[in-house]
Length: 233
Length: 233
DNA sequence: TAGCAAGAAAATATCGATTTTATTTAACTT
DNA sequence: AAGTTAAATAAAATCGATATTTTCTTGCTA
Image 1: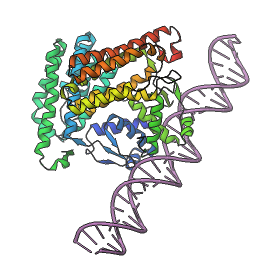
Image 2: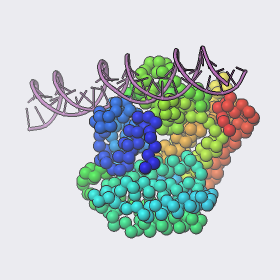
Image 3: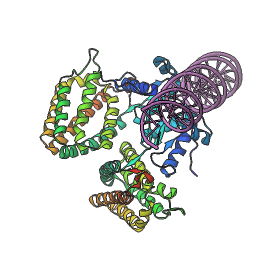
Image 4: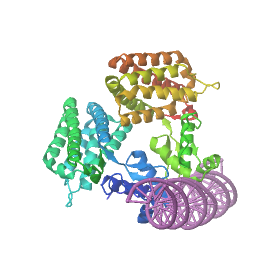
């Protein structure tokens, strides 16, 4: 394991909580009681609060003044906005990445793709595997590293993390796309390394939008019980 | 005044501290002692810490594990990256804004521009006026509201706020650009409202890059004492 | 005098308790 | 029985104090 020892207690709780959130442990919109989390991690309220504040800044959690924190509630509107933002930013950065990336960038992309390919998609319980999620994020991140823009990279990553919150509530349909997704990734990687900017951008756009479309279809299938899976109309 | 009463103590300190930071009160890179700020605002360390954590999330402050917080240090590299990110995002959003904005958007742009025009650029002491800064940010924000994308708007605003940190350390040269800046704003507003997307994008790009160029020239003029104004090579 | 080490001082990170605010429950009115 | 108010409970926000860690100071050594 490459788990760097957290310098501070708060940092550790932040990281763990973040992993839980991105792992789909909590129901979207559900309340996060500070005391409970504090005792669970064996720390004081202060450190939970600090971790929460940080997560709120990233948009994974929402702060409700005088009412604590809750997991960011999902909505169709936000999913559409999020998708739009992701497409706009990730494609722009990918274009620059392809234009400026060197050999080390190509290698990173190929390596990340290889790792992704070799990682199982779901766990036994049918949930998104943590390892796959990590590899997936790493792959998309690698695509953008050629642009050498820390700011843009981190913005893109943050948005991608947010959209991960949505993906844990649709694993049913996601399974149907299993084969497609792998092909899409291979396609994107190949086009990027071949320096076909427009092709890669198109493939990435479709990749992102296809996921959203699947999520929307799933949300719609839940005619009324949108609440049940945490997606409010 | 439209100053909404802060729901929570922490919120109030956060807002005040934020205003101070964007107002150029502190030297970039300087240490922010929690105890001092706490007593100054008459609150406990906890609330200062929470405010700081939030500001760190926005990039206005930097958290140094076990060593507290400092104002985000400035660097030429970061300024270049920041500019690049701003140009990329702001122009993309502006394009969409011009494409989708309705009459209410046009009105908002015109109103914001009018306010900006009527606001004094600097204070007596030669510092950037708080009122002008606010009007300036509001104008640039108004330009993007037509896109109707909360996420993209807030990302753009956050980046613009970060770049504001740089602008307080170059007011000397900024004065030379006084007339130009006003003309640039008028130009951008007119092109946007006239739905000349490409023209507006070009004008906005130049506007942003011109400011950066001025800052870089200023930084370079400070041959050695980059440290003195908080800009490290 | 420069460099290092030990001790003192200061500052941060964390805790446990208090105060304040929201939420639930229960009693009461119409 | 529905709605409303009031007490009781639970939770969050804040505080003041303690434990750690860093930073500064001072005295020593080469």
